[in-house]
Image 1 (cartoon, rainbow, N blue to C red):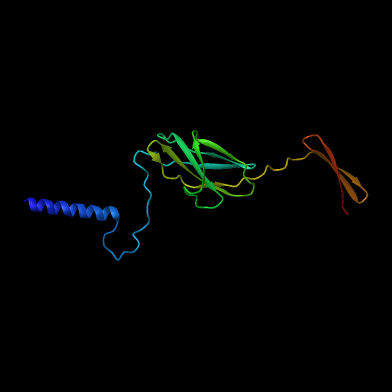
Image 2: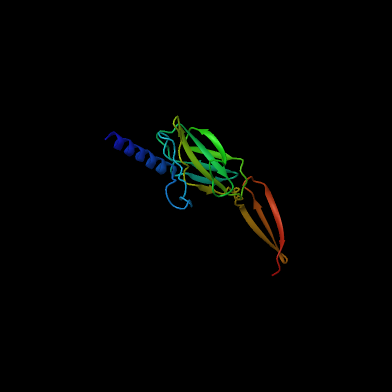
Length: 170
């Protein structure tokens, strides 16, 4: 009976090695994609990562993760942000204003949550494109007719009066 117990134990160890290594059977081809696994006890991945553009900045927010003590924001200007991308670490709130950005450039973001057990999987990717503030609308616009021309005047919001002389043929 002792001999059978050792044989069964040896088979269980062999099957465990095969399952853990992913090296069982087949012709040695692709075993499929590698799925990252966060450390046991680490926070769940952050949800609802949102980036809203401003003038030269992105205002980023996300849902709090219950067991997280800090967050790390990964970013770049190309689709496909990973943990090797540029990062901003040590964030302790659920929002961040990323300033100093170039207008008309698209920025991509992903976020992780961390605690003493480790770092979570990355959030879904989001993006935004900062745009400059639109010009202010002119106020007190008036047109004065002239001989084959019109003079258009306006007062900017800063109360600086400008005069535009534009020739129009009628």
